[in-house]
Image 1: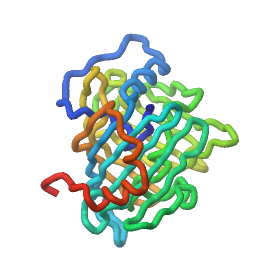
Image 2: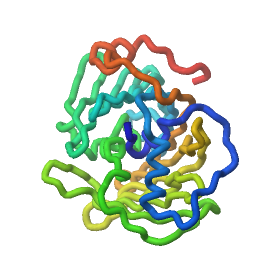
Image 3: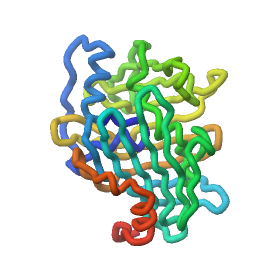
Image 4: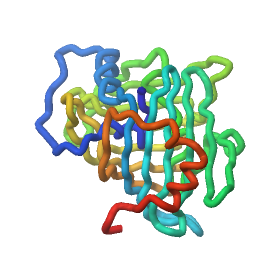
Length: 273
């Protein structure tokens, strides 16, 4: 499973402490750097807990959420489930997504106790749980887009980076709200430390800034805390992965609507919330 941007960036987190940097090979091409970044995102499946804090929160929207995230690989396709565990007023809300290369994502929104809305009905620009994240942020995987362009070097948080430009494929069945993604990828850690997404008219729509990284089993680096700014809606969400389990097989039954309804009320949030 190759994970997409934003929350899926951190799905390889294994809860290991920060460690010293391991620099990449000299004269590395952007294709080699992308391959190193992809290696950290390969997994059969995963479970995560994350804290999402949104400012400013809109009317009727909870500013802080605790969310569980499950992922599973099914041959050429993959599934990801996001579900709110806390606070009680939002508990049970979920987004279930299924991905197949070359096709738009499918799935549904779930509002407890029994309202189901197809993903396609709300569209890729719909917000997720009232946060700065959109369906498009969770669905896209710019690392797999063809023809990445080397746009030079940058320094982000005192770390040397390569600036890489990605444009979505133009196949008839591809659907993207984004026209261009620029990523400043650390040459030491092979982690995108800053990502900007541009929509129609070359307008900046979303900015992602990585604030903390951790080194996982296998030696790869992944983000564990990052800020997503939705410039169109004027809000920002800080995502922090609080714990996770990498490369585990998650049962297909966990993604069933019956299980989603059940876990929405029965699974307990982490203590201290």
